[in-house]
Structures are given as C-alpha cells and as structure tokens.
Length: 199
Image (cartoon, rainbow, N blue to C red; front, side):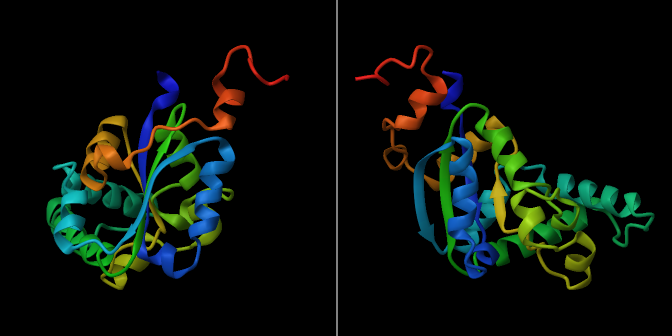
C-alpha cells in the first residue's frame, strides 16, 4: 500500500542538546505521518560509520555536494579532491553522531520519505526555507563547519530515498521494534468512505 511507505529520522546530538525533540516530532506528526518506532540511544562510532556508509558513495556524493555549494557562492573549493574531503566528512560526522544521545525514529505514511525531507529542509541550514525544521531552528553553513573542521550541525538526519530508508531502518531497528497499529487519524487520511465515523 502506498500509504505504508516508511522512512528513518534521527534527531542528532545537537537537536537533543537544544531540547528540540518534542518540537521536531510535532512537525512530522502534525502533517499526518505515523510514528511506528522510537528509541533514544548513544550510537557507537562503528554504528555511526555504518549509518553513513549505507550508501557506499557517501564520501564522493558529499564531496560533490559541498563543492557545488562553494561554487554557487563564487568560492573556490579549498580541498585537494572531493573524495578526500568526503572521507574527512564521514569521519567527522561519525564522531559527532556518536558524541551523545540521539533519537531514532521510524515514520510511516503516504510519500513519507519525500514528505519528511520537505519538512526537515535542506542539508545546509542557512539555505533551508523558513518553515522547515532546519530553516527555523538553526543557522549553520558548510563554510562555517569546514572552517571549524567539524560536522555540520543540522539537527536531523532524514533518509534520502525509499531504498536508503529500507537499509537505514534495518540498521537501527529490528522488525519487532517497528509497530503495526491502528491510528484513528489514518481513517481520516486514507479511508475512502470514512466508514465508522458516525455512530
């Protein structure tokens, strides 16, 4: 069923430390997504690296994305290669991801992957739209993170595709931890005839 699409969201250590857990969850709940898995953990460095390497092209992709961001601002990419830069980012991201508690969530609903990414906002907070989580609650940039030689502080990880979501969900949750339950709001969103509304 198309309304059973699942995606992974992780509130990163900066989101937890900024006490934004409730606000972030509210944004996804408010649109009609259903929370089907939730846990708070401190990831190991190995778990954090495995998370980023669910997509083996992560180092190259993040390097290319950052290079384009520099070029869009009329700046020269200050690193020897996109791959070398990407591996450095992988290490910094994994270090930061495992630096404290995170909130790991599984969300379900129609177009869950794309909808969550829309609500979350762009990876670089300073360029995220107002009304998104990143646009409303933080102001970090690639340049500021690079200058400080640290991971970008953008509050939330959200799966980038259905395939990525499936792999990430399997990394963070067992099948038993993802709950299948009836939510009354599902009847309003997905039931064709609204059967059972009237007594």
